[in-house]
Every structure is written in C-alpha cells, then in structure tokens.
Length: 114
Length: 118
Figure 1 (cartoon, each protein chain N blue to C red):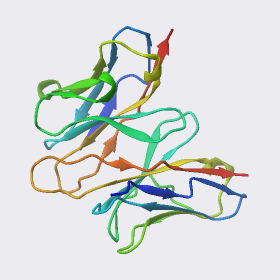
Figure 2 (cartoon, rainbow over the protein chains, first blue to last red):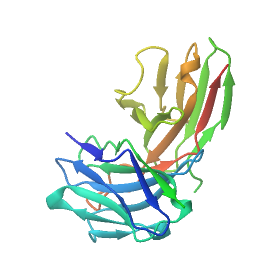
Figure 3 (spheres, rainbow over the protein chains, first blue to last red):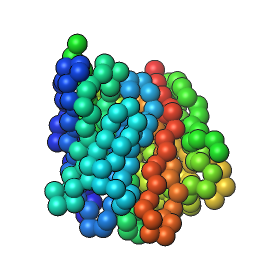
C-alpha cells in the first residue's frame, strides 16, 4: 500500500534560521514525489518534484528536497527562513502503478517567528 | 493552455439546497481529484476520477455527495441538501495519465470553490 507521513503537524522556526519539514513515504513502486505549498486562503502551488532523475531537487523560493530511497524519505529544507514562508506544506507521492493515485500527506504548518 | 478552472469561486447556499461545483481540468488531463479543506484543517481527499470512471471514492461521505467526470465537459462535485458542516473550500486537481516510464508529472490545482452554507 502507498502512504505518505508528514512527521510534524506544526513547525516553528525563527526568521533567518534553517527549515526542515520531514516526509516519509511508503510505496511498492518507484514513486514520483512532490512538495506543494498553500498560503492562507490561497490555492496550492508546486514547490518542487522528484521524478527519478537527480536525488537532490531544487525548487522555488530557495527550497530543496533530497530523495533518500534507503530511508524512504523526502525531507524539505531551506537554509534561511523568511517571513513569507509561513504556510502549509504538503508532501505528495505518486506511485508508478496502474492505480496511479496521487496521495497527499496531512500537511505541516510552518510558523516563522520574528 | 489554461490551468485548472474551478467555478464558481464562491458559492453561498441555504441549508437544504444543492451545491454544484465544477472543475475543468487542463487540456489533455484525464485524471481529476477532489479535496475538501475545512477551516483551519488540512486537505482531505474525497474522490479520484478518470474519464467516465470513479477510481477511488473512499473519502466521500456516503450520503448527499456525488461526483462525476463525463466524457465531455467538466467534472462535477454535487452536494445535495447542504448543511452548515459542508462549508469548506473544495479544491480540484488534474493530472495527465501515465506516459511511458519517464516519471509522472504533478497534479495541477484549481483555485478552489469556497462554499458557505447559511
């Protein structure tokens, strides 16, 4: 069975400090993995995606994520948080199988402290 | 290529009325997903459809809710006899089908329909 686990429902960091949002997945098939961001009262925007190319993926707004197959993880990081990063972040897996269903994690709300 | 179009953006219904939410996927996309987001909560999967087929409706309430994605036209999420608890943002996403083995592309989201039941 396919699943996505975002280990933290809330993360708080100070402005200018690193951000780490954790995501673990379970998939019987080689998956594609994504991170989306949702700002308050807005739609969802794709931050970055992994599709079996380079394991370190760079996205928009300085975010990046590393695919680690041995750890079944796809954690999202940013070296220095900005106030505008405050939002909800979703880790998403799309397994390579007939079902082809996209699966969302429950989300992590990122708070940026001044 | 226009993005995923949802309409209306805002919908107000009185208790007991019907709500119809429309989603036009991106051109060439045959997969549609509907999600509900209650105030201050995360996205909750409702239903996954491909053209003329419901693939997974495990997130749909058993009563009053239905979804379709006909061969022609938009996908429709229908809520009958709405109640106050149905007030939420409803998001639609679309994606293309499996293509070869080059990895899948992401889902593209609409801006959502915000349903208010008064």
